Picture: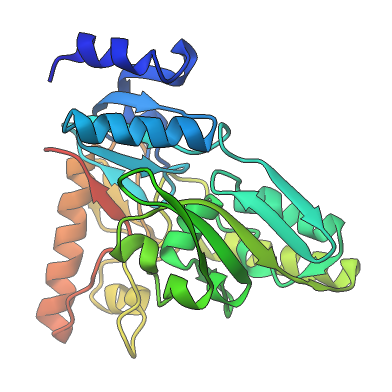
Length: 304
């Protein structure tokens, strides 16, 4: 891949500030590990995003789209090609009545805060999830009995050819930790969220309760990607891990949280390999004892 040629071509689409070369991915994911990506791009409009995608396709350059990296693990060798980051460059939103219209880079915490200001209920479950709207749509993010499926009315999407279209809630095919965004590799651009008018004090109380539960039960003071493993049907991943005696298990720089066994954390100095090796030990041990193969909830990207 000729980086100089690609960089010059990208300057025809994006401004210089929106292009980073050999950018360390540990700056862009919550695990704080990972090697460099060849190009990290931050388009500000749908048109710029479409042009970047069409260029990548024409030049046969692999690309992926991320939000704030709260559900990602990038390997130590980094990522070849292009990473498109939709975050503060793609985070506009507006509230009209009981409807929130927001771009995919908007943080769930900010949307939750503003839903509260407008006395809108239904978003409480998502307000404490440390991700973007785009990631939440892709994974049908959920907590405390709520999930995105319950509040999303429509989603604006882009396919891998740069074409834009809209899908209804039903057409999004929301399931447990997946949607048409993950199965068809579409890119979420924005969404229409429908909430209900509620009592601001009650909404605030619920959000505070959820936030308190998170802080007391989850290791929020260490880098991680949240729940590392999906919940196996009929079981809880954290309990299976705990019942194997793996609570607090360390491998080089990585550790199974002693606060919540479902979290693999980076207490300091971990490499991506440390985390991946520890995840393998956890999966192998649980499978050997219970005959259940845990599946990663965190998305793994890049090269060794």
